Image (cartoon, rainbow, N blue to C red; front, side):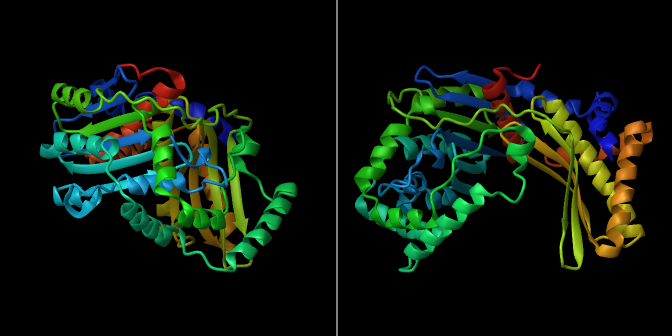
Length: 417
C-alpha cells in the first residue's frame, strides 16, 4: 500500500490525454468585472435546453458572532419576499414562470441564490434576480413569516435548551482540550482551523429577537456589487446577456463596508497515501483507501475522478458480483479549500474485510506498475460516458464554471485555451 503515494504521478503520465473534450468547454467562458465591481462569469452552450444562474454574495456564517448568529441565513430567506409580485415570494413566482429549481443557500463565507429555467426565459430570470436582490420592499410581516419558516428549519426553542446548551459547551471545551480523533484537514494538510459556529440555542434565541432594522442593516453592509459574483451557464446569446447584466446589475451604485474573509487556501501535502478504517462492534467494517492531493490543477482532478470510477467499478465487479464479499465499492471525492481526498470506500463483514482490503491494495499496486492500453481505454470510456451523458445540462456547465471561478480566484489564471 505504501506505493500508493506514487500512483498519482504515474496516472498523470498515463492519462495525459484525459478528457480533452471537457477542457475545451472553457473556450466558451467569458469573465469580466463591471465598473461597479460585480464579477461576471458566463458559459454558453447552444445545445443546452435550460439556463442556470447562481448569484454569490461574500457573506456567510463566518462573519457572525454569538449575538447575531443566524442573521445571514434569515436575510437569505427574507430576500425572496416582495409584496409587489405574485404570492409575495420569488420562489413561487419564478416556479410559476417556468423555473424548475429555485433555492438559496448560506455557507461559511458565501450566501447564494440559484435557479434553473428553460433557455427561452434566460434573460427573464437574470432580470428577476436583479430585482429580487437590489430592489427590496419587505415589511415586518415578511420578516415574521420568514422567521417562522426558519424556525421550522432550525427547530423550535424549548425552555430546557438554555440548560442543555450550558452542558454542551462544557463537553465541547473538554473535547477541544483533549481531542480523541484526527481532523484530516488540519492534521494532514496544515489548514488553519475554521471558526466555530454558535450553538443551536443561540441561533434559535436570536431568530426570535431579530428586528427588521437589524436584518436590513446586515443587508446594507454586505449586499453590494463589488461583493458579488454572478454566474450564468446555459443556452443564451452572450452579447445580449452581457448587455442585460450591465443594465440591471452594472448600474447599481451601492457601496458596502464589509465582506467575508475566507481562510487561506494554503494546504500542504505532508503525506499522499490515505487510509481510514472503521472497525466496531457491528457486523461490518468500513474502509476508505485513497490519496490526499492539492487542488491546483484541473486535469489532475479529472484524472483522479476517472481513476476512482474505474477502480471502484472494477472492484465492485470482483468483490460483490464474483465473490459476494461486499455490498458495494464506491468512489469518493472530498475537499476543504484547496485540500482534497480521493479514493474508494467499501463495507464488508469482519471475516471478509482483510481479504477485500488486500485485493483492492493489490489492484492499486498493479496499476501503479502498469496499466494496459485496454485498461486506460476502459477508464476513459467510463469517464466520457459520464460527462457526455449530461454534457449540455446547465447544472454540469455551472459546475465547470465554478471550477473556473475557483482557479481565477485562487491562482489568478484561466485554464489554457
